[in-house]
Image 1: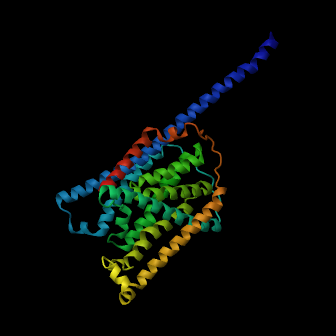
Image 2: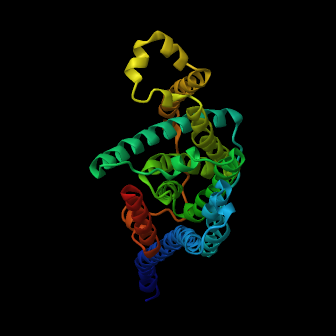
Image 3: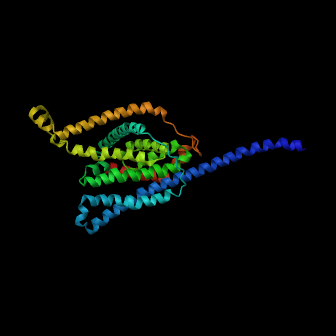
Length: 355
């Protein structure tokens, strides 16, 4: 009888093992869904609170008559970004931080590898901006007018250069990298580094709320996220983000403004046929802008080459609770928080097209 009992024990254990494995997998899926939902809800809260407060502030000022200082450019920047950085982001962070973090172990990142990433960033910025421009141009033709680009409006608008640098080159990259890389990826990576990088990048692109910025923001977000999971340090992705914003939001608008392209106007054909007039048109400002455009193309091509060469080395470490490929997309995106975020961002994208 004892021998018979012993012979049955392995079968009982082997029968119980699959049940425990399935239970653990089910619990992991439940926890993953709760994690992504909470992170999506936090991002949605940031988006909605900032938008509502910006609308309310504008409405109140219009209703009661804005004081003289409100017409100043710096005041418009404060009314736009103070609700985002001082109210919306703290609330969103409170929601996100209810999810346990699992940060990566910090590792060294050589100067050579960092320099290699610069042209790749420029390629992503150039290619993504080109795709966004083509798609918004298509919508503009359908609409019968222009499609607004909020970043372009801020960059080309009047205002202090100091304020533009402070907001676009310093504050925006630091806040965005902290939220979309450190806070989000530290909480997603336990379910897969690749899942964390791709998901946070798509959320980063959607968060911009317009098609002009979505494509290059999502592409750059993947690069920044990969750098973060491999180094565990925010300084590298933040530095790259600052550099990209400095090029696209400060340097390019400044050179464009001083290029004198407005002189062409409707008389471009006459100017091109008149050597004297053409000589007056070729100013130092125009030459600098042309040099910038040429260098941008050269670095973008170099970035594409480097991406093809080094892209084969891209790898992700296995995660503790790696989600299986089957059903991963549903777990990440088909939950209350993520659905709210996607719907909110789509509404903003549609509104940006209709404006």
